[in-house]
Length: 197
Length: 201
Image (cartoon, rainbow over all chains, first blue to last red; front, side, top):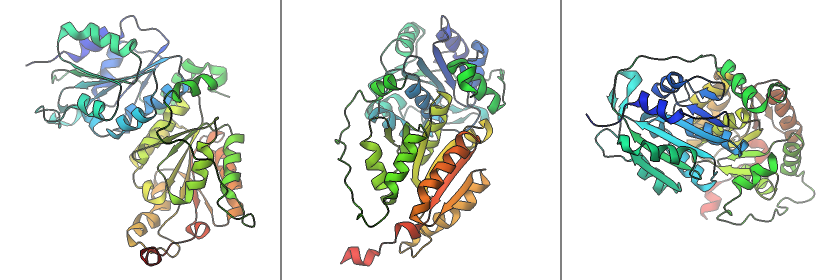
């Protein structure tokens, strides 16, 4: 079985990350991966609204141009909202990176194959053809450094697809109250005085 | 913060230069899009997400010509709800302009602002209700109020042009102060109906 281990990859990805990096995780495994790597107020976990992760992160990025905004999502989630690539490419921001952890499966619903499973559909290729400035696909451990550079340093918008193995891993659950997660994130980003008035 | 944000998002010049806002309505008629545009400015709204509708065209032109407002065109309406949820998470305020047929596209995206209590402001131009010629517009036009209410969106209906701007102001306050998802539904009666047979002549 080829591909990276998602838990180790995300742990490595967030190593050295500061509070000026805002991270949003798409539903399912990316939420558990990010929680496992280290929960913090600058994380927002999207427990639903499938297909929306990229656009939610984009909305944040437009309002917070001084901060890096990283969306961590899965292939099934991204396939449901591919129009976002075209929208973001036509109104680009420099501070947004979208990382797709692509295991070719709908992991939460029994591991059914997605459109990327057989290598027919190429998400980075779709992002590129939509006009996203920087796109890449990585599948080797030797490329993790390059992935970090793309995610945190390269001017956005960046779409990076990381080919990961399909693994049955323990769920690592973050808080699930939407209003709590929203207020926690806004308090952290804007300061409580601004966020709550 | 705002000016930096503009710098970031306006980095690339628009593909089509913004049209100069022209007065398309006669002076004897009420220019409600200009009044709505003023309300959006007064309320501090800087992000305008759109999937176009003919009924919104003049308001879209006014927003496009306004340097304090960023207009972002979506490929589908749920992108707008997602982006505006992110707008609020990042400390800003936005509005979504859409038509009633687009309401059908946003249902599950509303789960996010619903459960997170994120304010959402929408201005919906209605089709399929007042002398509609195109039968394909009828199901979603007629279904719009019920679908929105089922997802917890508060509705403000307007039938008269003079009531539109005050309704948008009230909706904005209800959304951002009252922490609600709010849609202003502009009746097709206000916008008039077109007869496709005439257009085909």
